[in-house]
Length: 347
Image (cartoon, rainbow, N blue to C red; front, side, top):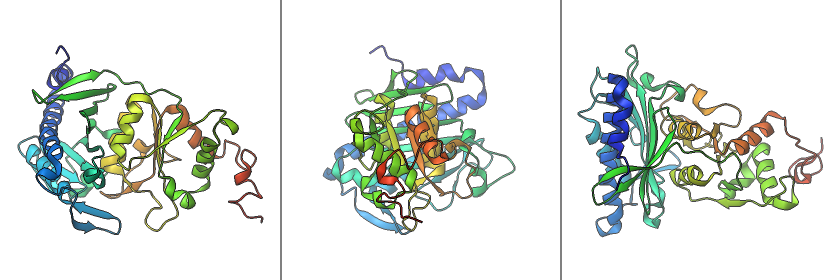
């Protein structure tokens, strides 16, 4: 078909050193696991009730049958590779692999798994990090996302696709099901700086803090508000689907912290969701923030730490950050949030 394969693309990148070769080998192993997982998901209920809940992890997270299947596939794919440990959303502690190996892998084996039985796109997110020789266990993973060597996510939808960065732009590959090979279809993705689409779970509006409510209210007011044009809202409940749409046509994704118990830091996991997604977005010319800080600069304190995540088109994310910092007009810009507005009480 004339399009470079994932293996060919990585072979050009690995010419400069041994570590790059080991990272490429790990990416290819994860790609092979994704091919098998895509087959399982494609058969769906013909084989099993993939969305069946088999355990509950914490107050809000359910573990489904397909989560375990995806996790087992990734563990098996990495067992013979130069990976010292795997941090997975499906495991409380890191899974030890080859003790002296130079790499670490963090993953959400099946992001958006609550959508499996609804036939909505889901995906696998991964981050590859260098192992620090003086740290072990959970501590080995507790470094900012800026330390990543590679990051990517697979989306299992109409096509099975891979969005990948190794620090030289973001590339998109599509799976040819006939040959079971990924081929490069979009080189050096460039996210439009401006957009008229936003993705947020509007059912949580009553719990948002003021900066998020102000930003969304301005979008809702469209051409009649301070933005001067209309917006569309998107929400699938599957972060990989939202982020892939942003890579292909721009937009902003918002999963902020809110006032609900257990959601003060949002629901997105820093290590194996926000960090890889943020690097992919940044390498495509976008922005990724917690609202106040660049996501990739956040120093994690625990393996499953949560973080607010606001990412996508540069100008939209910058606007949200200005509202958080107080640089944007607040009370005067929108009567809804003025001193006598619906969401502010008089002193």
